Image (spheres, rainbow, N blue to C red):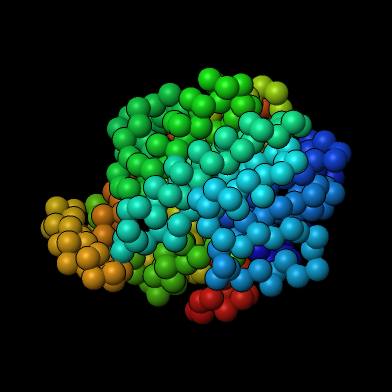
Length: 353
């Protein structure tokens, strides 16, 4: 996470007070080196929270140099490591995920999304002063929204192993919390973006070149959340008693179409963008063939179903529950935030016009 993003997250002292954990809190963060986890970790430290973080042995933690973090290197599904990490913890923010690649083995997703959740929750139950288990899932568990907008009660229909194990993990911890009294809150973030985010970079690059491939006419709906808002949402969920036992979709006020996103970027860069319409059925057939060939070889397929889903599936949600029950409202509009991201890409030379 950049210093720029960090300064943005602390621009409103009143907002910081609302999201502050109780004095003396000791929080465990999984996925602390990731895009979202790094900002959350820095916010916790600014609050004076004692932070313990689990990181893969290969993780680069240089961005945290000088910060008072207790690092434990290893696998988040290592029972012995979890027991050490959880000692005297009051809050868990569980958001770690494997690198999401089509070539990744299925067992890796299960270990990180399900097994680690079970180990953490069982260890949390043994901590005398434990207060909240914030479990971060994904809106992807709902699959395509046939009649948007959907809410937290909408049927679940995961489309790949990543989403399926995310759903299995959240279902298990929700049930465990209900049975044991462990205070659990589940957050399903919309598409996360903000300065330093890489997943949308390819869209910005294509628009900057004046062309954009799309399946259909770009009318499919996308739902986003700025990383600053998401991390504040997680902190609110960690302190509000109304959040216990609940599941929340954390997203901006409403979705936007893919075409609206492209038009916004096109206007920002003053580059007319032309849609290149591709037929859905042949593209999905090609994706299936690519996955069939490349996954057994441990090679990332050039095209796969999850990537195509971005251009075809509707992701649109009613996000009123988190506002009404927790009093949380995102402070970044998508229009403002996506322009901010586009400028950041230019200023940091991630793309050029």
